[in-house]
Every structure is written in structure tokens, then in C-alpha cells.
Length: 505
Image (cartoon, rainbow, N blue to C red; front, side):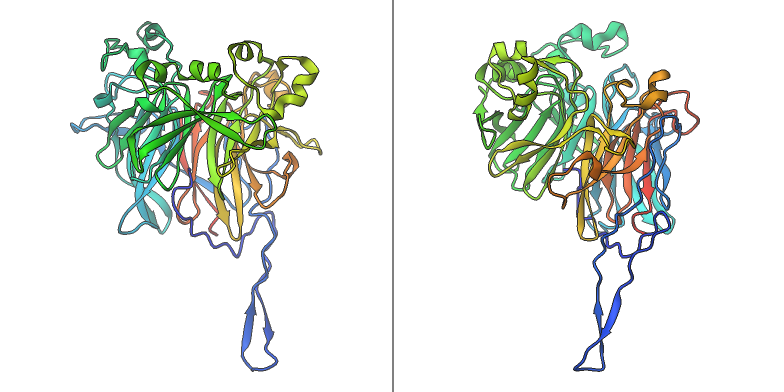
């Protein structure tokens, strides 16, 4: 869950697009000379949707919102444990806010993961993490002190650190979205992991592709959870009772996983399970995977043979009112034939499309899934596609989170389009072979939403995706601008962590 603490957002006045909130009105009490305050419920959206833009090299935000830079690749220096400083890694992904115990609304640590895979003699090959203090001052959130390196050497290094979460224990789960099928793939002819020696009794490639636990205060990795399986880990959600971790697999076809702890809040021992949807789609069961090293390394293949349900690239997941909302980003021109031949099952919500084309499945736009934690029901909640008024399209959701503004809860969805064709980046984007991505808000009080219910909050700079979206206690928004087009003007020619302000005005 990326909304990492209560948001304390009380928004009675918002000025967006020239519209004003309705002011509270007063009425006289017929039995008293005292006046009673009558609060008129706000029904206005928190901002006016911005127009699509497939040319921008800057970040486009609604009127009344602004951004400031907190942390940038290469520009900022990261301090290693020995005191030496080196240029920061890039490919910023997961953001985690760890509130200060004495002043949680105004101070805390911010952890940023790096979905990196390249050699770095100073800060460690492959992925990584950076942690630093931030504080709310008169002019907004500011970095206080140094940017600190997180040491992953104690668990044999790391690779492509993607999503994750703050655990109930105050540690961080960072997911390795590692496509590590063999050592040469990690070595990359010397451009990747330069130390290819065995670690912990296994080849280096078998040590990548897991959930890594980090102590953000000590600034080091403390555990690599082999028992949570080796696959293309995208995100992890820990339940508040410490019993389960739900895990997404960014692969096609991938598996939806769950890890059940033997003892609550002790993640070192547990049972890895794979989800299998019921035939009617109204429920499902969890299949136990053998608890041994070989099974953990080959868990997806074993799950498929056991009949697990298969999905097309699960990305981030967010918990809201007892349900998980999962971004399934999709893939163009996919075939289920091989997976089905191995024993895997196909989700209920794809059956209508498959009835038209056999095993061929063109999942151009992807969707948001809803998984009920009490019934194990998985359904399509929001299908991607074009807006009915031709004002754009919502495609290939990736990072997601949620926020409560006033009385409404919103699911916040970041795109990471699979390609620039088929209208996903407009005529200009396709002509120039450029990616463009957007962030949308969805009012969760809307029943059976469609893309027409989405509010476009921003358009990201050319070439970049937005990720690591979280909200700070005052309502300010942390966003990572990841892998932008290097020819963009400064600052969005490098991976950058920004804070967006305006929700609390």
C-alpha cells in the first residue's frame, strides 16, 4: 500500500479552473438566537482535467499546482557509509515515506529505489536505494541533510529495484523486477553485474528476482526473501495483521502470488501460494507451492503446471476498503496457447475476447483489476481505451496509489504505455516515435466506472513515465519522473524526484 500513513487532508477551498468551492452557509435556529453551521458537501472535483499533450518536455499540471525538485540523478551526490560522495543513481521508482516518531506530520525519511541494472563501482552494480530526510517548512517540503546510500552488499547485491511497500515492522520491501534467467544476462558484457561469482551457494542469476527487505534507518539491506519466490517482482502489499504479502509478477503470462507467514509479522518463514480463479469468476483458491529452493526459483513454471490463473503483466497494487486494485498493463498481440498447453488457466474476464479469436488475445490498453480479499473474487474493474469524446485514451496502467480528498477517495493511476502506436501517444508521438504518459484520478464512489470517469491530473515530460506516487501528510504529492528523453531541457532530461503542491491550498 503506497498511501503510507493517514493523509490529514481537509480541503474546503480549492481554486481550479476559475471555479470556487461552495462556502459553508449558516441558518438561524428557530429555538435559539445562536446560529448553527451547516456544512454543504463538496461535490466538485479536486482539479480541472488538463488537456492531452503529446509534445511537452515539461510536466503539465492543473491550474493552481506546482512542482519542486527534491532529488535528481547524477546532479545530487550520495554519501556512502564511509563518508565518500558519488553521483546519485537514476531510474527512480518506488517512493516510501517513513514518518518521524516525534513529529510525523512534518518530518520523516524518504526512500527512493533505483530500477537500475548497470555497473557502478562506487554505489554497487545493478539496482539500489537512496534515503534522505525531508521536513515541512514554511515554503514546503525540503531536503534536510545528506542523500544517503543504501548498502545491498550484505545480501549479494540487487537488480532493478521496482515497487514495494513499507512493512508493518517499519522496514521496506523493495521488489527486484529482474529478468535474470542466466549469468550472461546480468553480466551484459561487463556493463551490468561485474562480479559473477556464486553467492549463498547459487549462481549469481539465481540470487536476483526476489523481495529484498531494507532497514531505512540503518541504510542497508537486511534480508533477501527467497521464500517469496523468484520472478519478475513488481510490487508487494503487506496486510496490516502481518499474515500475508500479496505479490505481482510483471510478466506475460504471469501469476498472482500470495505469501502467508508462519508467524504474524515474521516474514522470514512462510508459504508461497498462487491464485487460481474459479470457473465462474466469483471466487478463487490459493495453491501451495513446494517450499524448497528449486521450487522457489521456478515457481511460475510450477504454478502454471498446477493450473494457476495467468495474467498479462501485473504491475502495482493498492488496498482500498478490503479490496486490492491491480494494474494489469497488457500486451499487444499475445497468445495463450503455450501457457494453456502447460496447464495454466485463463482469467474469466478474457473469455469473450478469446471466443472470437481462439488463443489470440490483443490486450492493447490493459485494465485495472479488483481483487476482493474476503471472497478471492478477481474481476475487471476499469478497462483501458479511448474516451468517448475523443479527448484521449487511458492505456497500460502501471504505478497506482490512493488518496482521500475531503470525503472522497481517489485511485491514482500512472500510465506506462507499451508503445507509441495505436493512438496511445497521439499522431505526433507516433510520428516522432516518442512515449508520453499521464496520471489520472478516479473517484472510487462511482459504480462501474469507465475511462470517461477519469480526471487527467498531469502529462509527463517526453519519454518518461511517472512512478513512485505517494502523498505526504499535508497532501503534497511525491512523484518520480523516470527515464525521461535525454534531450529534454533541464530538469527533465534526468530521472528526478519531485514534490507537487496545490492540494492543500
